[in-house]
Image (cartoon, rainbow, N blue to C red):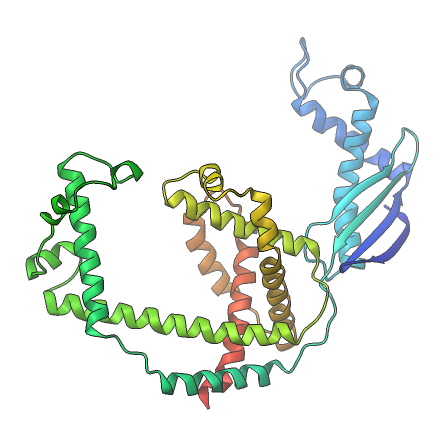
Length: 364
């Protein structure tokens, strides 16, 4: 299938694999290439999939057939070589054909980013120290919800309801052109908080129940923020004590993820991304450059957590993955199952690793 394989380490945690596919192997893929081309080719006087080889070669050219045969051969060869010589790969390999000609072997190169080798710090000690510090902070600053915070939420709900009713009754839309209406007009649509009113807002039995559920929601929100703050401190300490080169494809992946989230947020504001960027006088390239350090940091954190997961054998079960995949397939119908499974496996592994770091210290 292949010969003359050489493996060369490159900068930024990459490996280059070069090799040759012999002429005989390449020729064996020629028939498959012809069948593939014939299935899609349209030539007057012939049915698709039933075009004689001679006619097909005259139509598309021998070089096109050779290139398709090379692609099919590489689709078979590349996964084998990557698995054998770069088992710690973390992104799709970049494949380059360096020499191709009829009747000759095919030369190729594969560049693949690999998970860097690095020494982990004492992650259990780091987690324990940061959790102990957060416990002390939590004892000093008890998580409570004040009456003012509850009243502020209720007032916001009243305001939102009044705005919606104002626009509904006056047949206007909630966009930038309708924000300058008279505040007094909106005020007329404000309703007092009564048992009847809160029942229209959701599953609330009365005002007391409404306030209680707001209190519970605010408490959960504050507890979640405290959890995120504690986890951020653990991760910051892990990053500060772990040095290694981050593969560029992983940084690019994080940048694209951040850009996608940014675009979604802008659209939810009712704006186009181009309009928003014009307003802030920046380009996509500008914000990507600004986000580069954060993207590298996120990629570094993921690599550290994945390395801990490998060392501690932390993985979600097949049942856990399957359950989450079923849930996400309803939301992201355009993604195939393999993409969703890969995403779920990664996210659940990272979450299990963070919980693993927290659990012993939290039990103390």
